[in-house]
Image 1: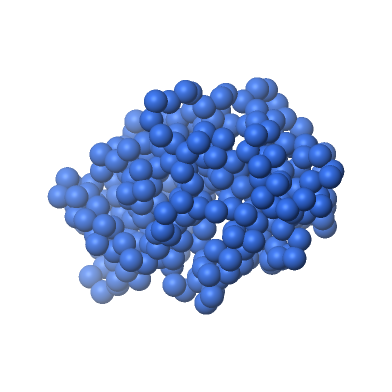
Image 2 (image 1 turned 45 degrees about the vertical axis):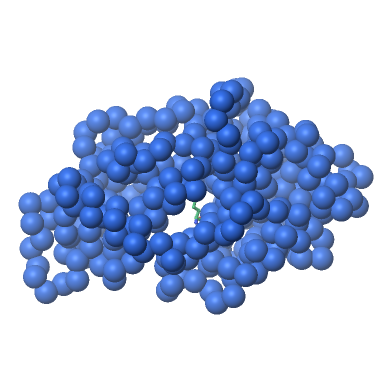
Length: 316
Ligand code: GLU
């Protein structure tokens, strides 16, 4: 697999100098082994943190048991170690954080932002307008859930205000949530906590100052900022890296059968990830140790060279 020609548009903004310590993180879901796409997010967030002399924390987002693959959390940790991507402190597992999520839900409920929803997917699909990222929840249960029998999800109310943030790579982003997602789910009808809720509670718990992750989460960020505002949580800076897609243009993921990283060639994997991020690693690093490669990369890392694109296709 090799990287197809990359183009970049405009200049990136450098992270503003901050008197506060930098806390970055990598937050994989244990739905399969580490693949090339997740290595890019891990490496990009690691390099940003290490170049800023900051901490790089690890969180396993294991709040969705039906999607999890047994053993993959440990496999991810092992793969990170093989690649020399050493994290600080202990790993935070979301499966142990129910009390914190319940407390956040309680606060939203007390403040009048939460309501129960008994709509099915097909009801929403037939009544909701299509927005830029999918169907917008039409607000059917805003004034009370209609069916008493069905299990109910919990939704958070959205408002008409513009939510905006300056992504350190992708530039100014803005959304009015009522025109993009509508009121969104924070606890699913099956009782599981929604990613949008857990991620903001835990970014705050881990004192994250900088979220560096794949651009597939760019359009989720305004929902996360909305929750941060309602829950008075800290609002980190965001930087969304381009995501790797296969030759059909699909994001590399378990669903698209992305192959696990070859564990015998960590330096080559790192070299390919650095090339993907347009850092131009010298060819002799292909035969270096992961530690040597990362030492070079921490020094050389330049976010301005990373392509300002949401998605980049790889050739098989
Ligand atoms: N757990 C998410 C994933 O693996 C990433 C969440 C995040 O970085 O905010 O796609």
